[in-house]
Image (cartoon, rainbow, N blue to C red; front, side, top):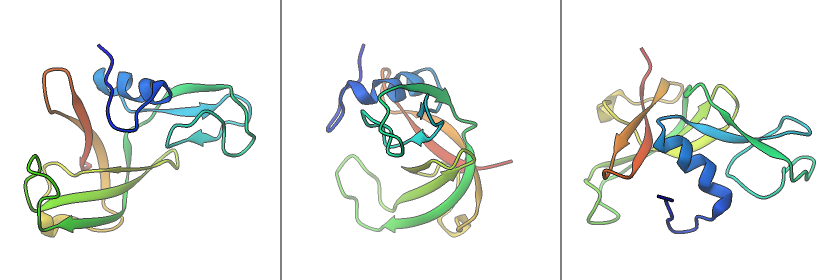
Length: 131
């Protein structure tokens, strides 16, 4: 079953297929090896159309974060933490934290990916403190 959401196209399908299999994958250009995230049809560096899906280590550090004190949607529980994680590969991804108290989050905090089931068909990548 394909996962389709707001703003998603077949360009994103490899990412969601990876998540479904509990793997964090990103596009990488076959011509110049540039990581391509967010996903797009062409490489932002050399404009090649040739890309491949490559697994990430899933390890990185919190680059920035914000706490939403009011839930942006009834499906969210406040406070709602959004983090920008810089992965070892240099890719930055927007996500959420798991298993971390609000006062325990800090810039530079080492993190690793975990996958949280939202429904039987859908999981989301989130990040917890490494170690």
